[in-house]
Image (cartoon, rainbow, N blue to C red; front, side):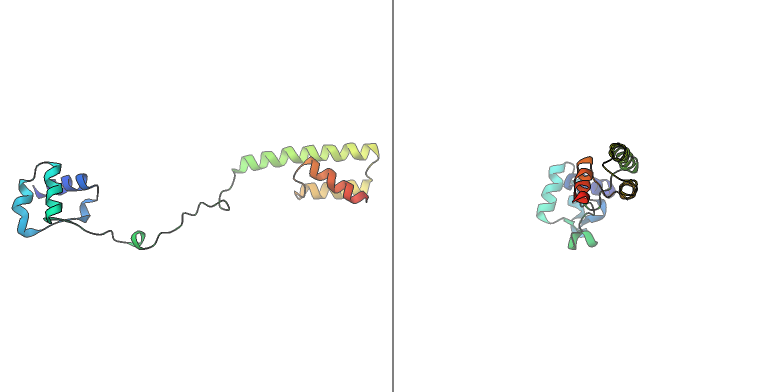
Length: 134
């Protein structure tokens, strides 16, 4: 009987059953409570007590470790972007070598840099090549 009242109180007050405590002197009043409003009245009068939350969450608010530095893109997506940009840059270097803009040594050096992800885009590659010429 009292277990059902505790469940009703927990549901009404939106807390766990473990946090609800009945005052033993007023158990007769608690047994007579039928509705949610009766439970609320008993809480207001002090027959039902809600215990405070135990544990760490109540006294320290921990940060969720979901900052921008922690979010990693999916591996498949990262690899796809790497492959796309690498192919594009290598094709461009090959074209420049064919045109005679770059020597064999320069093209090999740039290819090493492409492999090491030194360039973000084709425009970035073009800027670095202009810098090499000067």
